[in-house]
Length: 258
Image (cartoon, rainbow, N blue to C red; front, side, top):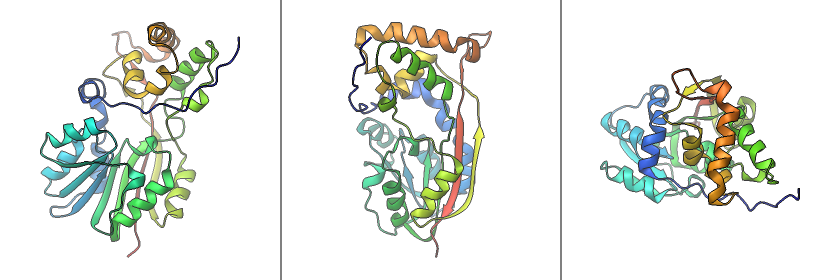
């Protein structure tokens, strides 16, 4: 079979209603990251990758002055509907200058390809002594989910490698990223967190793996997703019909030297 040359990954689209339906667990599981941040009333905090504002709202309720940024205009509109100061902006394009006490980011940085540009922008945004606290996918995250859809695409003569939209680093690699941008790392840990989904594999890929699905014609996607679900069923579907995923997280805290 001849091999197609895929186009660069398409931009992931973010539908707030679909996200709330299939991905509400993201904010729920981000609560320990808020605990690590330990927000204090009156602090000015930047939420990078705020999405629909669920955790941004929690920061505001803690008495913080919060600005949220996200590249998705649809998600920013949902955050603004909560009464939040949310702005359409990419992490790597921020131009804030020493005006935040802390930067918070949850489940967002693994979508950023220009990683060190984004971290440098966060560093600039912080006041001296300010802190960066976040969580993202770590090395091995969704390994079997990625493998399943990769195999299904390869059977169709499509190379999945350039379709991967994510950056899942190891502790060592991300420590190097942070330190290269001027941060002093206080803690960094990678841990496995098998996660119960609020949907099935097709719903998960439609919500988070759109770049893979767009590589095949729309009328072929249901069959592709059937194959992928069958591949994953033995490992990830429970007797009650619920589905899990092989999440691995990387949680970190770093500071800008005073």
